[in-house]
Image (cartoon, rainbow, N blue to C red; front, side, top):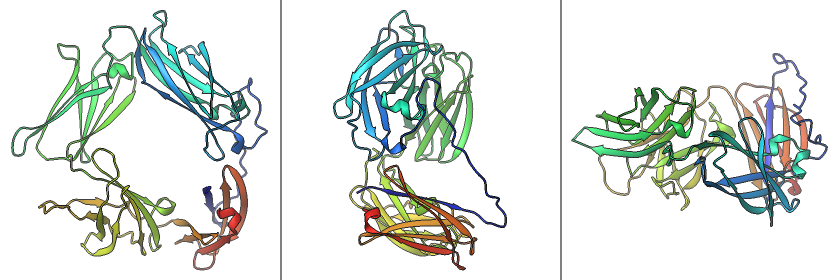
Length: 400
């Protein structure tokens, strides 16, 4: 089953002029101009074995080439071109990787003669030159001299220590050279503990390391550590302090909850190891009033219907505990927008039902564009009803 994507553009004829737009030409002089639909393009992905290397090591990679139209492995190209490019944009080496059902693998050797610095891994098929550099794979890596001790992630050796009833310590080692080979001086570090942010400047210790030793009193569930180098390169990592933590993510239909409009809200529940978790609970408002119950499947996914969301209220999810506990954890839903539009899509039998609802546009024009598999199917100009709604049913061949 192919996914139908609908794009909706609202405008008010009274306040917004009609603008003509031109597509930006991203084709470089040595590439063929695009004359073929984008659905015939190929998408190139490379999985590298790292992002930080020392000279003398080998960069191993696996390549995956998919069809942009259906995201299946592509059979259009039998050869993938993979380039190693230095900071002067000189192509040092080009590998021709044989593809079988869109899959290939290869490597680059980082010779001792290579200068330390930032390098680019670029990959493309000859066919993809028809579509410009947006369809080229690009990934930057850092290469250092042998023996600089840059192995390991930029933030490592993280420890969370409970020292007393209400005293906690968080220690970590930062390696700014892993993201910025030119960094030398103090390192800016921020610690976000449950949305409470503290900023520090670290100096190197006697072992030539940037070491964090941070004490705090409030028990936190998550810590987000971020460093920023002299050249404004940024790296962040989220640390789970509570192994019973549940990550609950909300995905309102059409991107947001809107005041006075009923919306379907998808959600995903992950445990501390990033795996889906089956839970059940209820949506409540700030006055503890029950709005709607919910339950996920074994993969941690589910949905519920939010009736007439109110922008003057804050809504929360409360998960039923597996065992009795004195602590109640509330997960806030996204704030409800006071004005906005909601586009909903639902399959009704063999047909596709599209509904539009706005709480501020009345009898205005909307433009509706529907695409399937990268192919544009419909461009429609429609009129909202006086109550700000519109519905459309498409035939079965589009919904399939």
